[in-house]
Image (cartoon, rainbow, N blue to C red; front, side):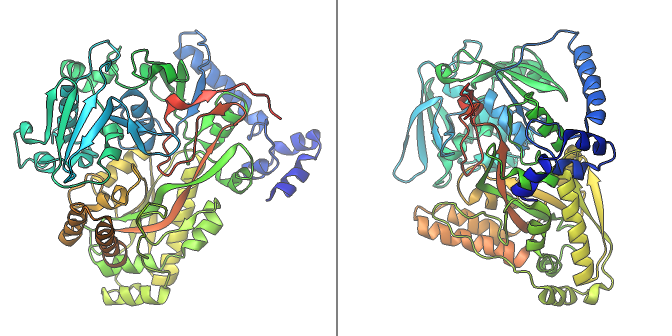
Length: 577
């Protein structure tokens, strides 16, 4: 329904709407919604709200807290705020507010800019980085932040006992990967050394064009050694938590909220815009839009908190912001399980999918279909085309793999994560479409397996699935933020696929100082990934969607890595025109 149609519905009398609301399905109720109204039937919503308010007061000891300066809806409950352990974007946003590294993210461009390191020098061969820390570098406790804190923090990420999925972010450093794999036991052999309290020297195994971008990623942030060694795995539960970022962790109430308070000892505290920020885990798209419309939330920036039934209407509103960014929706295939261990089977699955049907019929946010894993727009890189939609070729590939017409192909499961939100419905609808396409074009049977988000991630890591829904948001503006995922020893691979040629191509590419030669090698690697082997099947490139009123909120900018540092966001009181 377009805006003109929506407005004509809004001119209907309120009494008529109220009479119909009691029996109207949710999808119909959404179609006659206007800004300022609850999206759900009030007769159903208010009892729930009263119940939630009662629960809120019971949990908080009947004390009503003042409203935070900014309230953000952040998607799923974070699994961890530990920079070495987080895996999801919701975790990353919070971890990045608490812990910061040598660099930080520019909110406008998404590029790395100086943070605890006020400057750095790079050797002519691109392998030696020397960082100079700020003289006023302090933990929130007042203790100095030193180069040794970064040595400890990075070694901790690489320690096999930590088991961090993002340890590979540090693999460009000399001996880092060997230490993480247990081939080197002595951490002093890792190429990170404190030359003095304010000077850190980093030696890379090879030139890495995006190393400074990595330094802005929360995995490389400084974490408090004393607190971690004293409290072990519980260090984030013992308050006050020493932090290196712009915000203190004032409270973390599971399935309620994370409350952040301005860190007065942060080096750029003068420009931290808000004293108190509440970050709420909300998994329901309808709940998110209701909280936003009633003024209980200011910003909703998780792509999964958009009511799927309304997306084509909502993206026309001025407070719903649509932008391109580095994010791909794709299918992971467990290549360790027969018959998915055969590349021909994986190619057949890919070419039997009509991706335009998915974005036109289901997602409806102007997404571009994807045949490669890296989104367009990365400077200096033109990705290769992957496999096209070609059902006839798909059937030929399946027959060549030993399953003509789908005969003898075992029934299998497609796993997707679900909550009460609109996104989970989208995942399910996509699963249904895949189920129909694969049955129609290939004659194979697929069942849907719906699991909670935490189980979804755990099952991927344990290779406890056949095929599953996945997505990836780029951590930095370079093809390797996607291509490195599928290196044999990357903790985020989660497909069981190991290919020596692919590993060698990426390693060779990242040894290049010649950017043209590097891009050519990366194209060869991506061709192998998305034309020949296909441990993953790209479906479409996300559109970034967040919603906030620009008359009330400023400091959020569209950038390719979809990172919006909380300390740059502020409330304004400009009157609406």
